[in-house]
Image (cartoon, rainbow, N blue to C red):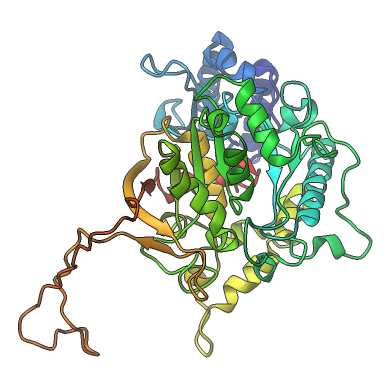
Length: 495
């Protein structure tokens, strides 16, 4: 059986998109195909402000009816992605739906990609600012990378390769009609020696893209989406300014770097800072090994003093901050195969999208380091050692969707952050004083030396030390598949 796979670039006028669909189905039928696969959002792609109205329109309902009629007319199975209107109990959420229509014109399968619809259908989320700090690289390279990304988005817009409608609209018009401000922040931690993750991300934080011959991915001189001129306000002040200008409990912070900027903002004006709705904080390792040292995750290792300000000092000042911790315990298990992110030069997406080429290039170093963890002398296992661990993207997804998607779950975990230890900088010292172990001494076989388990009691010592703070820690997410679909959709790399 012949199957047709069709591509089209939908616009905001549904009847025009339907005309293209009619032509594609007709051509596939003439070529002898018995089934055709049409892309997602075949009915329309529009700016976020228009999505709900278009989804509810009579034209959109007619689009589905006409597709069913065309399937019956040509005796052809049709797979197509469309928008469907909200349910009465969720009036603000549209559905990104996959329909399978049989050769008799009947819808035989319907898959709704919600709750947790892709970000381009969540028009309520706006990016108010980006604040930069040392981390993957030094501050100067981090700023250059923002401008490099701005240039890539402009090129992708001009070549027509951006399919994500929200990204396209904001690349053309900015947010609130102007570029997102970029605040320069900390160049070093609040204390101790400076460390970066250049060992993993390359000297420039982008696998050396900055040093390619001919500078094929230059920095933008200007951009409508991302400001190429730093804000007059340093990062900490920019955070506070945004919190002052918005209603309390409406601003969410995605903290995906060493926490220096966030801690400085809190220290400068705790009252204003406490207007924040939530802080989705990627950092720490509670019950798993670290990823920078055997016991520490990078963000906490890079500035444990900043972590202590937010986690330990703030509760002593009055009350805990609304932190939602996403430690390695939960982020490490959210992976995307590098094969879906680092595309080969002959891949159609690589050929057609300047942005996809940049993404593929700047993930080269992380992929190489990740691959190097595979054991030598045995066949390479891509399912274990060719996976991109989505630590930071998961925290961003949490900032966007927690409280909206019911799949998130958290629990309180008591711990302190070590800052002075020669070997334990950034270590999360978890309070397990209320836990009794039923495991006695272990031998090399994992069995107790005696015939019966010997309970190990932990003595409770009276001290003047402040109580260990409880931190709300994310333990459940909507799932790895949901997250992968979201991430690839956001960056136009769904295949």
